[in-house]
Image 1 (cartoon, one colour):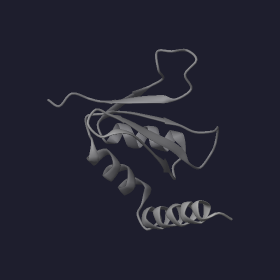
Image 2 (cartoon, rainbow, N blue to C red):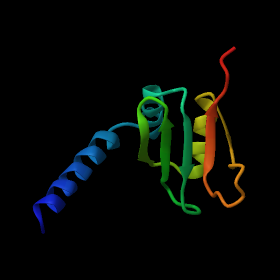
Image 3 (spheres, rainbow, N blue to C red):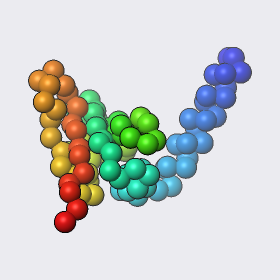
Length: 104
């Protein structure tokens, strides 16, 4: 095993242990709080217990995390955080896009 592979393994383990002590809802809330006005997308395999959530940040750039949530639960959690989520306009797209609702 190369040094790079060992380091990558340690980084993966430490980032997993940091998020494993928090609830998925807390991880989601903290991730959104970093850049609440950005567009978010998520995707997962059918019936998978986790989903990949990505942010296309205007200021912070693109960042993705793995959420320990089924896609239906993540869809609801994003709406609870004040986002409108829907399929993309591109019919080939298989992800869900979530945009922040205007604050009134």
